[in-house]
Length: 102
Image 1 (cartoon, rainbow, N blue to C red):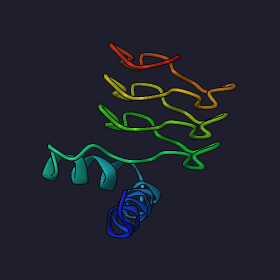
Image 2: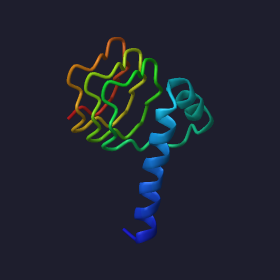
Image 3: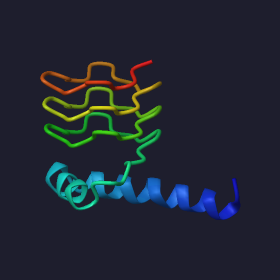
Image 4: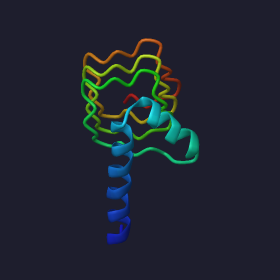
């Protein structure tokens, strides 16, 4: 991995986290206008966050802390949730079809 690639990966992760922090409506609008982007939220701190109905399909949430977050009705299809902390996370009616939970 080159220095440029590493810097771009860090910038992408930071940009996706900033959009996520603006709320579900802003996030979902952003996803709609960037349909081919795979969100990089690796190791994101999303504990106790309200993400009801969030569009997180194909998102890379590897190692993310989502403990006590509300992900009810969220779209998590094909999301990478490997090593994610989902302790006490509300996943009622969330779509976890083909999500990586290993």
